[in-house]
Image (cartoon, rainbow, N blue to C red; front, side):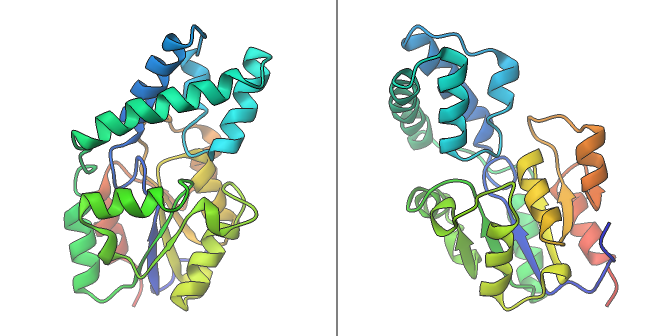
Length: 222
């Protein structure tokens, strides 16, 4: 576990951490699988959380023994998600309050997501929070996506911060692994993926909600 240090920056995951998109995406995925006549078990769907699309395409190609069906699946899922998104995706509880509180004390904010550009920026702009972040790192910006450390290391570099003095806030095992590999103080706020002994061991702290993240950061040294 990294040493607790005065924070230089806070870097957030997006889907399932700040925006309540994971449940919407799961609903779109389930409906898309049904629409193309494919079975998508709940345990496989949970493995999608925090994973970039290419990884999920490979998982589905193996599951269905078909390279074309996953592409049709994502075309339908994207269409359904777009319809749901236009109706509005809510924030995770306490998200706006936490962003405002951190900005008020002068902590630079970054965002690190497995969503591609420009879709990530479009979601953030649609939610009205794009301008809160000094940098947004998407899967399009890196060679090695989460769970590799590269996305978080790039975010820290862009923020001019020491990775070991950054707080990362994640909801998924993949994202948590990336933040921990970068040497960050990695906070897990679970959404759909349950806490396991592995994620508990990787996390600097497991917290119940974003309000608790604010209290945890406020209690850091310095």
